[in-house]
Amino acid sequence: MEETPELHRWVIAQTEAGHAPDALLTQLIERGWPEDRAVAVLTRALETRLAQLRAKDQLRAKDPALSERPAGDGTPPALQVPQPFGLTAPPVVRALDREVKVLFTLPHPRVILFGGLLSNTECDELVTLSRSRMSASQVVDNDTGGETAHEGRTSSGFGFARAATPLIDRIERRIAALLKWPRDQGEGLQILRYRVGQEYRPHYDYMDPTLPGAPAFLARGGQRVGSLVMYLNTPLEGGATNFPDVGLEVAANKGNAVFFSYDRPHPGTKSLHGGMPVLKGEKWVATKWLRIAPHT
Ligand SMILES: O=C(O)CCC(=O)C(=O)O
Image (cartoon, rainbow, N blue to C red; front, side, top):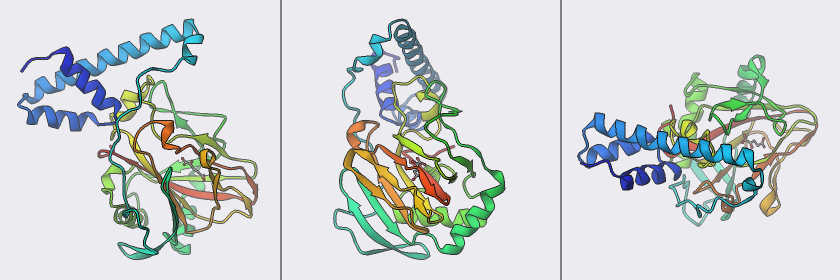
């Protein structure tokens, strides 16, 4: 077993495609590497990559024109995504304990609007559970993989741990059944409240693997490959979820949920989306992000 530059390149390519270190560790062990040596190989390969990215960042800071140039890395390879059903959409799907309507589907970007995923009572209970816990929403920090405030996201929010309450546990099991995606490959539910004028400007939910914060973000479950935005109320006006690349606006209707997937961290997925400003009343949503590996 030799630690070659080729092996390091493989580790980096897999990581940038969104595979979690745990999955790579398992593969190395399966190939016969002792666990301690496999961990050392992974650590060295990722630290080297991190150092390269930091150096690139410093160069960009000195010469802003460099940021304008394409990375030249090509399109990342496709990842597995949640597939609730095949190409033909059924009118209704059974999700654990509930019949859920399929209101429309779009192939590219892959978007599915589900009707009645949550009952009115479940929506109200989620709002009641979260109301007193909200604080200013943050976004993923591209430099650290942690969280940071951002002017494009003006809502407030609260993140629940997975299975935080019996209600959340049930909803998560329902989502896993609906999307045919293991529950532990989902992040905890994130509740958002938008007041009049508040919005979440168009963004991608995946992590750009070339950013300095990517290794830390991807270490906890790999790349995001799907999002489910559940509407917990119906705003009086505004607040649709929009997909600007294809001119789609999904109205926020209590109990419904819009699902979209992106098979690679790339704008070619057309998964750019946002929460449009609320014009009257307020808007509450619960978002579930799905990862390619168990999220910790
Ligand atoms: O509020 C919405 O409609 C979209 C929410 C969203 O984009 C997100 O949580 O990533």
